[in-house]
Image (cartoon, rainbow, N blue to C red; front, side, top):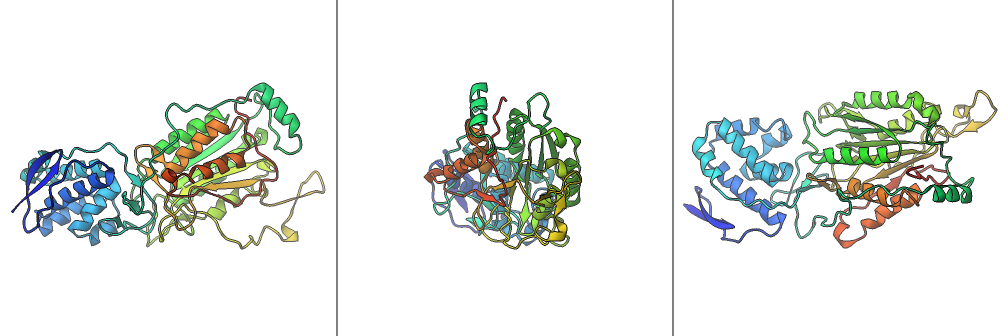
Length: 435
């Protein structure tokens, strides 16, 4: 039988044993467009034999979770493609696979269809879903389409025209004098050697790719360089490699002549930590978040003692509705408060807290989704960059973080709420860009 589905213009497509969906005009939003692409994919997948369907799935093992592919029937496979890759990429990927499989007639028929792709971005959220609405593709990250119950954020404040506002020398001197003793010391610009580290896993052996994360890398690198940090970027590491990179960075001699550091970690995640690129359910490769704090504590990184250490984490929590990994444990570390583990400086009889001068900012509260725009980057990172550029010239770090949180109170951005975690800052941390 023939089915008429209108997208801009009416097209005729062939399908066996399926009711005709109603004709509709070109979709006005992404949700309708995604449904259209999903429907078209399903129509063509129905033409594949069981053997051809298995072969089609094999072509997808490098970009979609193998376990999900094995269990997916035709409707779930269409949903998985659109939710994971986005509407246009899913369609183009299917065309390439059909061409490689030698299904010329099917491929040519599909190529003639005018889907009228809408340029609105696909937004991914972290955790699980249901067929036709939210499809659970793994226990690590979810891909969520727009729906009335979970509208996508529509206002992204940062833009390519944003620039870092500098603090004037006069304001710098005035504020430093006014807040003397209440702010972290700022080393002279010519003498200091600030360092920052970005670890971002975008491609995985067994997990779906984190499309759009490359924009987060670029944006955070530009921001931190503008704030006077030399930025090291490491991508697609195993859990052991992440730990090794962190240890090497902690031992960097430049910290001796630096007044602070930033650590930015972005990946898939589980409640127990951050996933390396080789994470799989059968062989968990996890970097515990607590290990990050341990590597940079006073005992293991004395060159950053009494200096702000800012940790920004974007990683999914896993099995529930999808969140960024945060450390909510109320149990104190066994090594952090016993008398025999207190640290004594070799040149003075003073003690130092093992963990101090940390602050961690995470993109979402537990049990809530965290959005990533595959064309612009993570919503949290976009907002973070915008508010740093706008207010680092006059506000201290905690106030900037608070402004980012407040930005998610607006109706158009009320899809997640960033959280400030494990804060042990004892003074105000001003960045004074330009000074």
